[in-house]
Image (tube, rainbow, N blue to C red; front, side, top):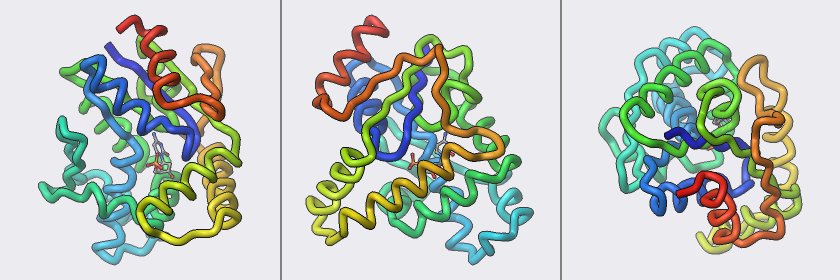
Length: 214
Ligand code: DC
């Protein structure tokens, strides 16, 4: 079984997919983490973010692995925290806009789903990676709600941030995610659309479970 979930940054798709995965015995695959690993590799090897050929070469050789306890390994090193910095986020947005990079990453993501029932989330899972997925969802939330969530997450981690700055950076990422040459985030008639703005995590999880019948 393949459950595909797309949605913008801060829509809650990571948190929700992880819980649905645990409850329904589906392997959770965070495709954003594959782009983040490539971005980390590019930064650590001092590859220029404008050097597309070098980035494509790095994408062709990338060695990423997810474990059942939701950890991410790059070249057999646990990079789960390292790939969440603002610097990596911004570089991930850049590398993910290169069409040839996406070809390598989509291939990798498909192979990750080879032998298990999976719940996979990203931006182009319902449209490009698994257009024939058994179930397709688009999770959304208002820009204010998404900025508030990120602001609260930062507070919990002891990171000081400005709500206005967060909102601006989410708007920039939305624009970049929705205007890619290939693999843009988009809504289609085949997705079940869920606006999570006024829903609890449990409510969203239950709504998805109702649809997939698990
Ligand atoms: O979901 P995330 O914030 O971890 O994603 C990191 C970056 O990768 C983000 O800029 C969007 C991009 N991405 C993508 O282009 N396609 C995907 N399937 C997943 C993420």
